[in-house]
Length: 333
Ligand code: ATP
Ligand code: LTN
Image (cartoon, rainbow, N blue to C red; front, side):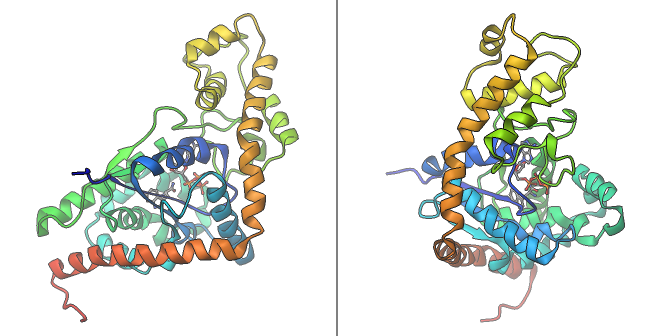
C-alpha cells in the first residue's frame, strides 16, 4: 500500500516585498517540498495587521506576494495556496487557543520584544497574541512539518506546547508539528548590519535584497555590503559579513564553505562580492520574469486563491469542530 504523504504547512506575511532572506530561508524549500509532501501554503494577512498598514499598500502587497510565490514555483494545483483571511477557521481557532496560551509564554517571544521596541507607539494585543494565531494556522491542518527560517523556531516551539497542552486536557485533537529548518539559508542577515536578520520591513533598503530588485541594484547592494578589516574569504567567528555572503553563495550554488574558501583563495573581497551578486542576479532572473507574467493576470490569481480557500476551509473546519466539541461547545448543526 502506498504510504500517506506527510502534511506540510507554512505561511508568509504580505508585509512588504519578498526578500532574498524569505526566498532562501523558506520559499526555496517550499518549492522542493511540493513533490514529496502534501503541502498547504498561505499568505498570513491577518498577522500583518499587527503592524499598522496603509490600505492601498497593504492590498498591493497581498497581490504582489501572491504573484511572487507563484513565481518562486508554488503551484496551487499541487499545493493549495490561500489567503488566510479568506478561511474563517483561523481567527476562530486563534481565539480558542488564546485561552490555552499563557501570558508568560507570550512575553518570552523575542519577535514580540523586537517588534514592540520597533513600533513602540502601537504595542497592540494582536502583536502579543500573534503566536496563538500562528499555532491555529498550523494545527488546523494537522501538519506534520512546518518549513520556516530560523527566526520562527521559537514560535513553532510554542505551537507544539499549545498542542500538547490541549491534547493533555482533551485527548488527541491536534497533531504536534515538527519544525523543518533547512540548515542552509536558514538565516540570511542584513547586508548593512550582518548581526541582524534581513527583513522585509527594514528601513535600510541597502541591507536588503528584494526579489524584484534590478540586476544593477543587486550588484550595487552587494558591492556596498559591510564586511571586516581582514581580507580573507573564510568562514570564521567574528566575520559576520563574510559569513553571511558565504551562506548566500553556498545556498544558491550548492558549494560547501570549503569549496568557496578554495575558489577565492588569494582573491579580494571585491571579487567575492561580485561573484555573490552575479549568482543572486542569475537565481532571481527567471523568478522576476514569472512575477511580471503572474502580476498581470489577476483573474488567474483569483482562481487559484479562491479554489485553495475552499479546500482549506473544508479541511480546517473538521479540526475546529472537533476542538470546539471537546471543549464542550454546543454544535450548531
Ligand atoms: P517582517 O519584516 O514583516 O517581520 P520577514 O521578512 O521577517 O517579515 P516573514 O513573513 O516574517 O518575513 O517570514 C516569512 C518566512 O521567511 C519565514 O519562514 C521566515 O522564517 C523566513 N525568513 C524571514 N526572514 C528571513 C531571513 N533573514 N533569513 C532566512 N529566513 C527568513
Ligand atoms: N509568523 C510567520 C508567518 C506565519 C507562519 C504561520 C509560518 C504565519 N502563520 C504558520 C509558519 C506556519 C512569520 O512571520 N514568518
